[in-house]
Length: 187
Image (cartoon, rainbow, N blue to C red; front, side, top):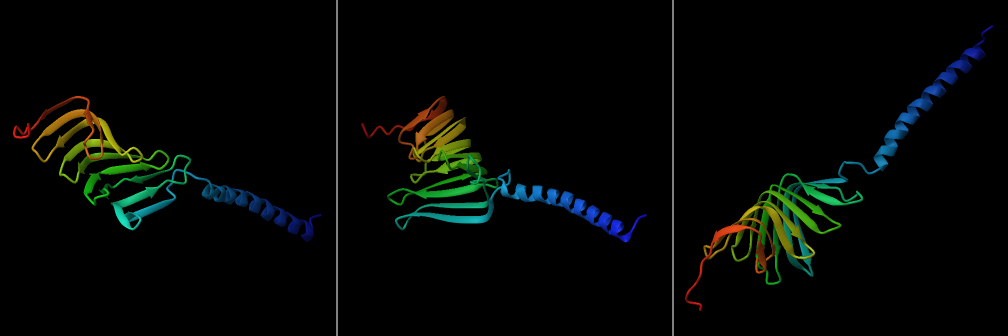
């Protein structure tokens, strides 16, 4: 004979089992929120950041969007919609670099710039490349891709790969063709 006690006990059992299974599904979702995944920990929009050292502006970074993945084991920040950086030397001379895409690796200090990369130095030297790496720790830029360098004197260098300091005073080109301007008055 089935009594109200048995019916009530059965209903309570069904509800308890249902709650256990539904809690397990939610528990997995809660655990997923706590573990680092492929999503950025932060997204910045319309950035205009000023980096200072002892009250002096050393760099200004502008970008439409930044994705911050510094929560991962190999932290980085990505600029998928392009980036522009103005950086100033000790004499307050400005160099500017722009690219369609950029990624900054925090652990190594390496910056990878891609797509219509243009670097203009304070003396108006202009570098154009499809990709450029910038080693912040060493103060060095390099690429293995085709590039063009135009100097204010009219000299031009087109090559496949180079490496140089940021002022282009210690410049090494792998293969190149160019025009050099020689001032015969300075012999």
